[in-house]
Length: 164
Figure 1: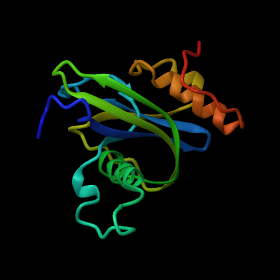
Figure 2: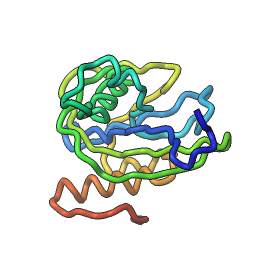
Figure 3: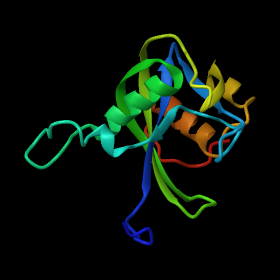
């Protein structure tokens, strides 16, 4: 595989999970290579196993691969089930190790389960409203995504921007 390809990106997907008008945030474990100890929302990287081992939905394609990845990652990281996954925004970055990432941010409804953290990923969690979220050291951009979701829930669509 050509690692210099301008088309090769790590793909990740995250979920702003809504339960009783509050949002689930988690603190990344201190041993994480990227953003240790920072607060964020559940999610993770898409793996080829998220579709390769399954039958194709059409002659050529697997559908709902990101949704399947997000459900798997949420169950692994925080132990809960989600549904009604909807797109919020996307972001791209080049990490310190020069690996490019594309992240698709979504909103999803909490369905069931008790929070059970995968401790190598996250060491704390909180259900917060928008005002309470300001008291946490969130990864840059996450608060603005929470505002977008709050707006979306009120019927107002916005693209990502700085919200104060």
